[in-house]
Image (cartoon, rainbow, N blue to C red; front, side, top):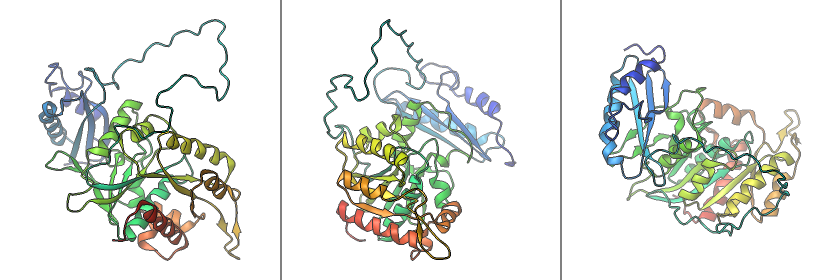
Length: 392
């Protein structure tokens, strides 16, 4: 089969229209069930989101749609992900029209910064009541930052590799739906398969079980998804994946959070029981401001903050080895002290670390004695102790 170019999108949509929605009798496209159709060379896939309680009804439809894609010209591998959305109703919130915004009333008073907007019964710090760990996972930690560009994914992958190097069974959930980095950084690619229990089987690399939306989307292809659809994808990667087995549970699942404090972050906090969070920042104040926002979000849900990692802490002069604090210094330590948590590590700007991420060969596995790898191993040892995980 010729897979030298992307499959024809219009042709695939026409074929999927021939698969009928069992409830409306319409084709899947007309019924709004073909969401986020993604094309890669020789591959095609989409998400089919249905109302709660209808997964069993739509499973044969998923299988049929996947076969239709697989038989289409230019497609060698196909994947249709079936999931549901939360809440009552018949229509997916992704397809619901946005409510019209009411015009502003005359004489509106400006709200002062920091003013309390309403009495929120959930404002007091407390764990979300419906949050649960994935099956057969002992601990879950999130790696978060309030902004992009601070190296959060580098830290997530490097911590996962370091924890695995300590003999722990480790998984990595790449929850950064709009900018998935784990496939590249771990050098793994492919299509996750379905377990007999209708759960996805994560791919493995460097002793780490990995799940990422990047396995369905070509590098550089935009994820043009609204918030509810992205949140639905994250929910499936959390709880509809075979992370561990009853006789071999995962010791720790590392969740690479997207930057910010929006829909996906709230979905993760509300649906997944977190044993703690690692805050990633760089030394300068502009990054620390956003790191504090992320820390505040977790504090409001009574999620323990395990520590702070200061990334890009300095650059070592090639001639003298003297640290050059390009982005300032002391910010990470000061923030850790403010939060009352340890500074887990200060990671230098390092060419080898950057190259390892680009090549998909994490330093913790390929160069464990390098400076960055030692720093991440020290952070992993501190986290293992704080999480109460014994050495494997």
